[in-house]
Length: 174
Image (tube, rainbow, N blue to C red; front, side, top):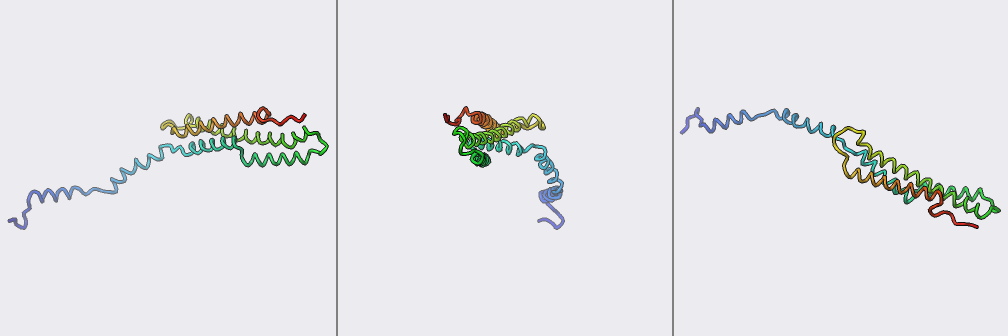
């Protein structure tokens, strides 16, 4: 039997361990939290570059499919052509004023959207060269930006061909 004041070695070691274990929890959590809080600030998020790449593709698609701005501008040119062309004008002049100017206006707006798509895509691709060295630009951003550049080039080419009447020019009236 044990006496009241005596303890076994196991009990003493258990008490010593529990007395040594208390640790300042706030200091430990603060030490661990500091590197985690600094990491997001020092790593680039690429949010702006990703958004720019997506905008570049969207503008490229608008240049190819047409947008409401081009449609409204073309309708306006058609109306102006109808108002300014007298009924006694030649058929060639009427066709040019009513349809030709509207076609060229549509081509101008498509070319503007294509040019914006091209410029934004190139800026997104060139941005890492002027940024903080470190983490490379994510592959998906490069891919989407290249798609925007490609759509911009195609849209710009088609807009020039439409404007110069090489592609789908006005019918001959003679």
